[in-house]
Amino acid sequence: MDYAIILIMGRRERFQKIYNNLPLNLRLEVVLVIDGEPVTWNVIWLEVEQRTKIGERMLEKLEALKII
Amino acid sequence: MIITRPNHDFATKYLFRWSQTVITLAKKRNILVIDLKGKRASRVELTKSVRKNTADFIFINGHGNDDLVTGYNNQILVQFNDNEKLFRGRIVYARSCRSAAKLGKSCVKKGTRAYLGYTDDFIFYSDAASKFLGPSNLIAKTLLIGETAGQADQKAKDAYARTIQRFENSSVSEKDRELIPYLQWNMEKQVCLGNKNARLKI
Amino acid sequence: MVKISDEEIRKMVIARLEITPSKRKIIIGGAGAFTKKELIEKIKQHDPIGQKIIEVHLNYLRSFKKQQFWG
Image (tube, rainbow over all chains, first blue to last red; front, top):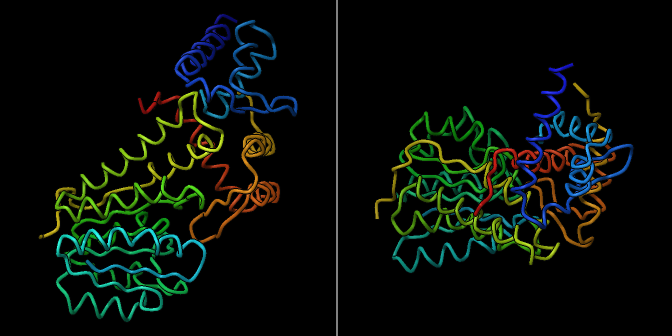
């Protein structure tokens, strides 16, 4: 359980680091499809910030795509 | 300088036109230009020109693959394990897809001083050709002003990088921003094989 | 580890292409010149050109991890 928490925090931090350094214009670009819906960096940030379940899933997918 | 400039399809017509400024610079610097344009971009003409001339820069425009570069109507000009020795002692810039992946390496092993080219497809937008072919032309132009192959490679990459940076800021249109992934691709797939300190004997 | 299907990747790249101006032509090596509509079709058909475009976009998205900003 603790290991799972560390892994999830690692993804959040990696996402945050990339997002913080992303030029403003690029944050409007689609980077993922979740439940059939395209989402942008900004949408992911909103979900990750609020620590939602869907945000966690988004981070998992970004990691699987090797984007974070 | 020996330059091949086929113009048989949409893509090669762009390379044909964009190469003109490189030819103009060469002539301005009193460098002899052997312009194998159109149908003259053939294996026979290239071989004849290389054997008859001491031109130490060969600029190939056209299509290609991992192991070959082509000329007019996609006729093979130089191919892996075939006639790479044609480029021996010269600096080559192949503005062709993928040829640096295999052919370029073999050319260098067989005596090409430096081989500048691409390890994957070269991609560009027809209505924004300057953003792609401008940096690409810099490779040839940098060599023609006497700088090294490594410097030519770096100058072109710096030009791509400057354009990418400009297009990343918030005031740029969607039209420009959409070019970024392709500019980055060409920049990353561009390589300089062989002696990076090689320069033209001018 | 979560798996991403090829279909999800295709949908993502199609979504990225769909917001681009429609009449522009992209020249991909010796393969020819393609409009946005044609590229989207090629992606849907699992065509090698479609695959190349997916590769270009994934390469670009993965580059942010390297913090390579040209500034």
